[in-house]
Length: 165
Image 1 (cartoon, helix red, strand yellow):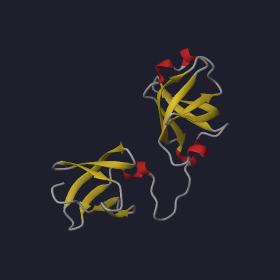
Image 2: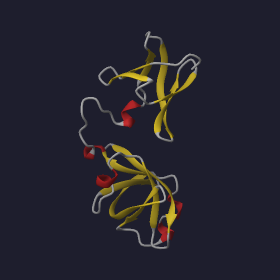
Image 3: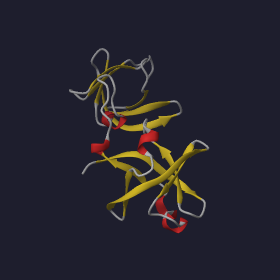
């Protein structure tokens, strides 16, 4: 089974075992709906849990898992990924891509100069930032002004860099 991250545990809330989650999905309502399965990697193994409820709170989600009823059970979860089975991914339109599919894509400029590969995805406020590593490291906002083409078949991004980038 292959897993995809839909959120990161950033803390706990209350004494009943609710966790604070920074969502990393565009499908929050669907992914965190009651009864949905999620997985965490604990002690080197993926463990299955079921969403009891989730609600927004101060820019994060408060998530209650059906199997957890005590804060002591989740206090060590900070930094833990919440995942789904990749079979649960929504099909996307032809011009859309899951952010995780950008990882390890080759990046080149509009004049076909190679820059390297997407090494990391960073949250940059309102948009995603691509950390591209090659001969040098470049941070590129994932917005139309910079991203000219996403070729999923060739696993390649064509970008427009501003002078000095």
